[in-house]
Amino acid sequence: MSKTPSEFEVIVTENVKSLVREKFANLKNTIKGKTNALKTHPYDASVSERLRHDLVGLRTVKIKKNFLMLISICKECREQNRQGFLNCKGCKNRSDNSVMIFTIGPHDDVYATAKKFLKRRQMPS
Ligand SMILES: [Zn+2]
Image (cartoon, rainbow, N blue to C red; front, side, top):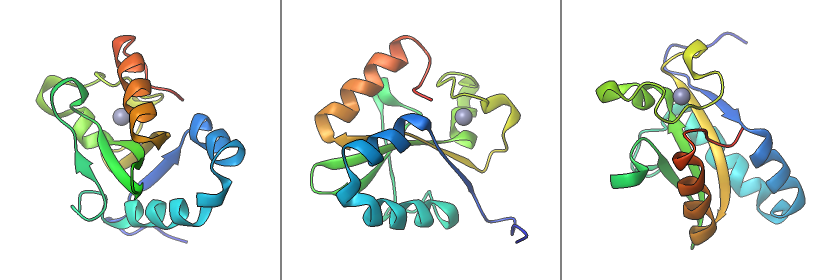
């Protein structure tokens, strides 16, 4: 299948794959639906929301009440001289239209994970 220019490549990290498999298997279909939306319109407000302050560069995707997915779009990793800021694995070799899914879980867990990894400047892979 050939890719249209407006299509985004969604990369699901091993971290997320195992979380879905081991902890959130009941949400698999919802997660799949959101992942498909990320392939076509990741910037849309109905799909993701941009974070600010110490989590700038990341976006949240609402899966259900109080349950989120944390993503980045590589174009935004590279804005404002922030290239490499998130240090997502293989970022340098990926196109701007790459969407990384870093983690998933209840609101508080997701933000705690993000802060921990941002401090080390290396997102979970
Ligand atoms: Zn990136």
